[in-house]
Length: 129
Image (tube, rainbow, N blue to C red; front, side, top):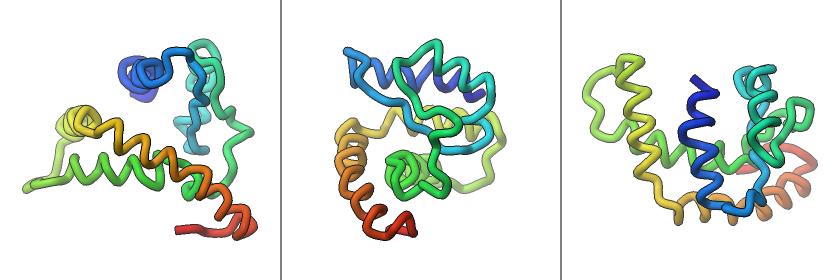
């Protein structure tokens, strides 16, 4: 599932946003993100990515996906939900919701990144909001 998501959605979006491939694909330390298959795929298909040993522990406050993008996505996935999703329904809803997120929203979360990194340094790696 993860490699398909990377191949079909995330990396094409990265290439659209950064046609010169001047981006770093950042992930957290989740097991699916640090798996051998994931590491090998990203090594073959991106110029730069955070490798397994480069993911700072407890770094959600410094990852735009965690502090902003997942919130935008989950708001769309669960808006108006009246029943529990089956796994296929949830996967489909996530893919549909991803298409609804504007580039403006993504850019806004990325532009907060430097400020959040400075806050993390000031907190000596401690929790930031």
